[in-house]
Image (cartoon, rainbow, N blue to C red; front, side, top):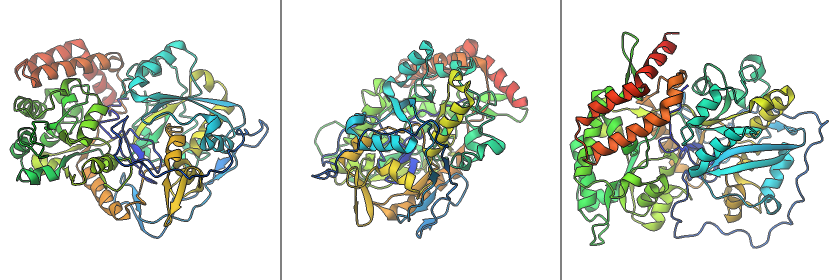
Length: 588
């Protein structure tokens, strides 16, 4: 099984747009109210809605369900059939909703049996307020029937923390796996049997016991299998990948045309650097930045490889053999395009060492003119906490335009689909020896994956009315306290993606159309469900080698012909053996 999406290449993104579980990034919480997908970024100039001046008396510590209580269960409540529903036009495209539905209860009782549940999770938001000051956390524990003990780890520290936990051997009850987030050693742990095989619990009749999880489409489960086994419960994410967005107001300011060819796109990005699109009189803007860390790390804006039609990691040939993307003419053309952009000054001077947060901050702050991350960040400038919102706060005239790969690349343009999930939550093998404990933990994950329009969905996204949110004109809005109480408390799981943007209902139909158009030209990584021991052992090393090699070429330290030498070394260091193992897996 190969999981190639970085939180950034994705979508960071099952994310929620104030009620939409969407591809904000594969980085933001999969909850309805905070559509940002990123690690810490510059704050908007205007503060979020103020918290109420008076708050209800804090609730007492959460009481867990007694161990003898019968387990609760999801009711199979269907996704809301509210007025204003825009049905999905294709598999993988979310339903849209333009109105708040009448809330329905989707879970009966409490999933937990009492006691404590420890959870390892990634985080893209600041840590939530401590439990004793956090009414939402306390209410969550009452609803789950357990004491919820999350190990909330900021994304930059996630890989190291994951490795330390695995090395220590004493793993938490629920372990969020996402090898693409600088955590490739997780594959080795899976290969060595560190996590429970959940296939018997989550297939056939057994899956029906978890009615929310049973709504997940087959592709979502199949794309995260490891050695044909279900190792974890996928966290739903929109199926479509991302595209680049550029500053349309800069294009107008410089008197440029929309990019309808790769040459025009090149000139536009260079003009962002050589011109003065902000009118500051300073040479302080550039075309783009970079935050990726593998062979395609310099194309985190998703312009070069997608527009040239580069395969998604592997291409299957008519004779059943595989060709890696780096061996294709399309990849070479993409690298050459990026090399020319760098030589002509389009890249931010700090690009070689940029982090995601720095790249995002440069885009929000008007230093670079093109960027890509979770799609939900770009639906509307009125959606609080999104990239577009923060940019408009910094510059009221900012206008973002989506750059479809077919616009400049023509018919060969593609996008890269997501697996339909962003990570998956596993249960350690030691915990898995207790069948009843496994079922309890799966019930908890089932509770945390409620359908849109349910009371549980509303609570997980908006918390407690009058404490975490206010309802204005029928629209719930998280206040400052709600944002700080929720954080990434339940980031490990989410319900199926929906498009619901209460602050901007008119943005729902265009967002759904955008997702559909992107998905129409989307391609999968055919190695997702395949197993290669060499890939597991060598992936991190070869990705770093690829990034270093491409950095040397793109920055001009090595000629384009150095790609040939890099391919030869990739083959000798494990690439060729990985190919053979994937080919064998494909052949069955």
